[in-house]
Image 1 (cartoon, rainbow, N blue to C red):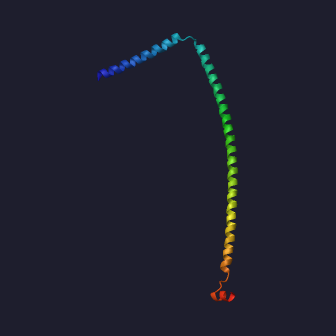
Image 2 (image 1 turned 90 degrees about the vertical axis):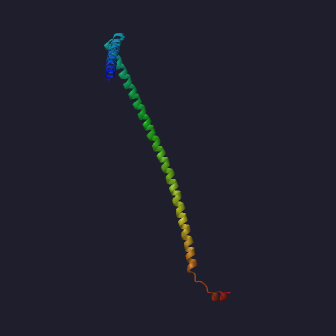
Length: 124
């Protein structure tokens, strides 16, 4: 148990010493001054800003194109749907007119007086 605590302490101490050594080496080996580093950071930030603006504009243009395409497709679909609806209504009306004509014909036949057997024999 005591060895486990000691191992953790040694590991933590090694990590801290290693991090400090890395920072010291980076500062000592840095080829630029603080002012130069700040200028580079500002340059990179400006480049990122320009790229962001460019990508934003491109995304906006793509969005406008997509909206335009969607509107065109919607109008096309709407026209096709209206044409199909009109055709279907025409067929329904024709079928209704045909059924009404058939019903009238059937009604006339039903309303006709039925000749009895005797009347049929008298007429012939």
